[in-house]
Image (cartoon, rainbow, N blue to C red):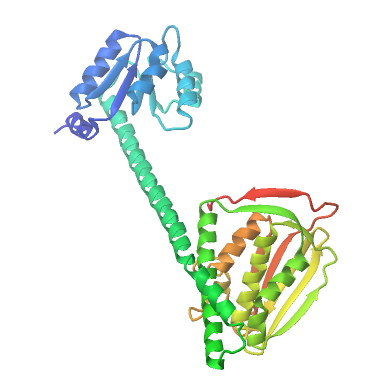
Length: 395
């Protein structure tokens, strides 16, 4: 079997792919139609008026266009520019046909969007080789596009399921928490019953927090998390977060050292979300600090226009490889600790949305860990100033 016969056989793989010929010379059109159809291409269409190219492409949707450069009414360069403007970045191979192409014309055609060129009179083998190459590229592009759509659909379905499941899981917890937190306040409870109810409250709150974290991660992933930024007091938000973990601090007899010394501590932030960041880091410190250990919280203005809040614990510390992973979703340094490993990943996303940073450092195992949260301070603003920002999906 010679090479031409092999190419004829290969063309049968692309028999359903569409080829559009645009040429005002009937002899050229007839030659190309015969060559392509004899080689196994069954979807070949020709037009001799270049002004019909855009309309024909919209109706026929070709996979490859063979375009003559020298035509009346509208030359090939103008057709190329119109095609590129209409396709809006989509890949449509266009092979220009010309009897004599000088360097200037070649560069002009390529700049206008030509993918390749064929010289007249046509070499049959060259025509088939080039068509085979572009058809194979087109086939790969279709497969990639199809797989991308499948992956996007699967990802969207997963996000929808997670959001729905998170909501359905959280709904039954609310009445349980309301009943348990109300009953535990009664004065006539036995120590065992009171201890049991307190355990119920803690575990329901933990479950609700994990579900909220899943919802937040879903919103961040889908670009649906919005910030409502207003002038806020970072020190005040830290204080609120400390009060939330006060019970954990007291239960584990932790020593809290507070040094909020930053003169400038007004920030433009979503108060709820920034407090969530502080709470996540403080709770992380409570988890890893040893019984009767120390948690330190300090603030300072490392630059005139920035505030840094550092939260340190005297806990187990981290190895360098762990420092790189703790801000990834579902990563947990110690799998024995409760939670899903989402809090720090969510905190990083929230800080990024605030145009701020969060990072961790540790001198190694047994040396504790310090988290640094940095964002810009605001001067000369009023509390009525507001800014809403929406999360961008992860790249």
